[in-house]
Image 1: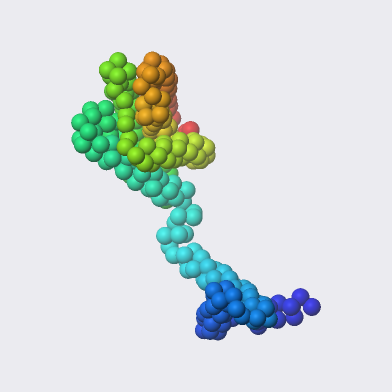
Image 2 (image 1 turned 45 degrees about the horizontal axis):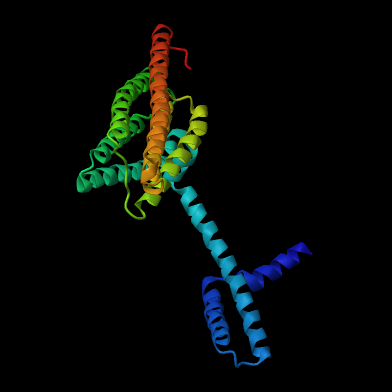
Length: 298
């Protein structure tokens, strides 16, 4: 019984390309004319709706079959096989959109700093530029399709990333003191603040996702990328908070702005400092262990 039903379904609703087009175009034109001109009898309207519903089902089955064919075509590609089987290669590809968004953020902040003669924008753009370059270098050195990982190289990269974060933290501390005591702030014109808010929440979301995703890969390089993502998200949150308080808080809330920015900047700087110290200590510890017992892995 089921086989007969499936045969009837395939015969009437699963059609080839030419019959599908031959049915769909006139049916949709017919129902469009009926909807536009309300003078047609009720029976004609019912007929138009019925034919268009049948044409819609035929189109949906055709789209589904096209999707199945395209999926099979993509799965047969060697690049897809590599993407689906190699977690490190997949991770590198998945992080490209984040690098593009962060690069746009760098360019926009430097451009706004030059146009508005705002030093703080330029500092932030250069800060992010260094983070983007560091992330690109880490991903470039991420081994793809290799049975054995060079953990000594990866932990050196991991430790060097921690050292870089300590250096950047000093710059961030100086910039935070500058914007607090010099009463500097961000100001994004018009819709730009909403775009920056979208970038901020994107960075925060990806930092959380990557923090969960990278735990199972046992890769010091990916752990370093996770630390950079977290740092990026925190600094973006600080910049967004400063801009939103400045634009929506009102001039009478200057003391409130100073207090909030000081507190947030202090928390961000402390967390970044702790991350840098942790990465340096963990990197040195594992490098010593691997040099004395190179067979073992963490």
